[in-house]
Image 1 (spheres, rainbow, N blue to C red):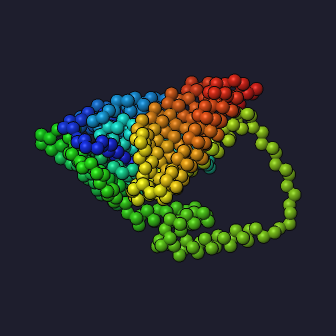
Image 2: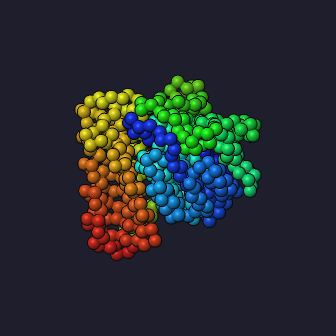
Length: 504
């Protein structure tokens, strides 16, 4: 049908030291399928896929909650309620079928009532898939499964500045399994209208066979997809699992049986094809045709098979840039009209800039975390892992025996920070994910929110503005879930002086 789809399946195993799998485990699943979009292209099989998956999972022993054609509030509420149902010893599974968009290295799930014009609308109108992962991780249950079967065609209006095509490949933490319906940037087939998507249809068939480990289920589904599409769609997987899990155990094995696993984490087993990854980078660079795109390829693959071509392209584009800078006769141009912003718009402009810079820091923190875990140990200088006396765990850069640079810190309560550190305190830019589901993206000073940023409350409120010493102080705009807006000067979390004109 020409619809491009992505499927990402993430499995997070959260095992406490010395513990073993229980003989039986509660299974809980949230399934969401969206078709009837109000402002975007209607899909054919999202709801069908969700209903079929709900029926199959129920037969496999899962307690299922099914949501179809869900709006933003309903999806947020469903994810929050789902996280509350998970508990130690349970198995959680989240499935989504519908529109999905990649932007700023995040994957967004699109509700049916979303009004999207460009990627700036995603944070407000869409659901960050990371919210689901964080809700599941916070439950600290035995095994989590996330299946995203989302259309990869960019549904935003043509000509708009929009999210990138394809799923963002975010580094997976140790103890995860990731399966994609097809390789990054490739086309996945949707199936005939009124039936099921190709990948979900084959996955359901594989789920019905008893005695297959979870890896075998997805391998079997992947092979079937390749055969059905004549090799045009090749599923892509990464895995790092401890122990075995069966959707349908063979014989008299318990329904929710998971075999014991060693306490020490097993090394990641990756079936990612490095040649395919490099090819994807090169094709993206050629498609963009820009100097920065070729430079990005050359930096990522300094000894790659296309490095000579990349360097030649870089040299040519630099010459073209130099030629374009040649002096020319001055041409009188009318002075640009001044940009007039309302007080609200001015605040939001500054906030959006801080939020973008904070999100740009996150991949650097994730990469520092990866290097810290890979190096191990707790060096005074360099990359490593540090466990504090209070139980918090830091993975990233250190200097002079302190957290300095980029890194990721996780607290026992479930909070998580990804960003910049200085002298053992959060300083600079970054994103803080609270265990409650709230989130701050923006500026920090001495471990406290200070500067511009955006705070997403778990109840749907959004504060955009200035903070000092962890409180709202300065200019800010608070938007409530029911659409009400309070804008003005804030002191200690209270609005003390509304703006004269409240523009949005």
